[in-house]
Length: 164
Image (cartoon, rainbow, N blue to C red; front, side):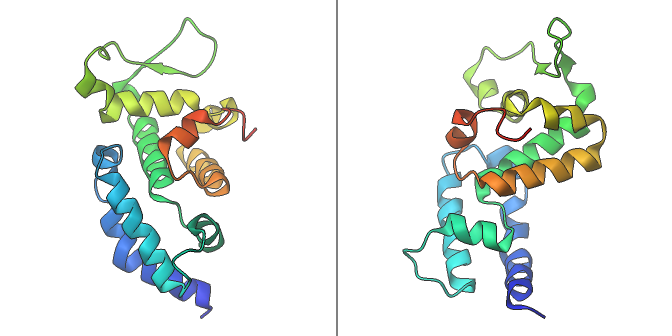
C-alpha cells in the first residue's frame, strides 16, 4: 500500500467522517474556521509536514477537499438531490434556482439560501450536469479539487467560468 493511500485511509477514517457530519448546517458558521484549522493540523501531522508549509498543496496532492470545498460539495449535492424543494427561474434561460423567502438574516445564512447562491454561481457547464447526479458529482468534485477553495469568499470572488 502506498504512503498516499495510507494517509488517505487515516484521514478519512479518523477525521473526515466527523468533519463532514451535518456540514451543510454548520459549514457556513463562525465555528467552521476552528474546524478548518484542525483539518490543516491533521493534514500536517499525518503527512509529517512542517507546520509552516502550505496546506493547499497538500490537499491537492492527497486529493482531499479543504473544509470549505467540502461544504460547497455537500451543499450542492443537497440542492441537486432536493430540486423539488426549489423553484426554477423560468424567466432566465439558464439553470438557476430561486427562493421566495430570503429577506431575513437567519434565512440568508441558512442551508437553502446559501445553497441556491452557491449553485447559481457555478459554471453553466457544471449546472447543466445537474440532471445526472453522478456526472454532476464527478464534475463538481474535480472542479473543487482543482481550485481547492479554503474560504467561501474565494469561491464567490472566482469567475463562474473557471471550469468550462
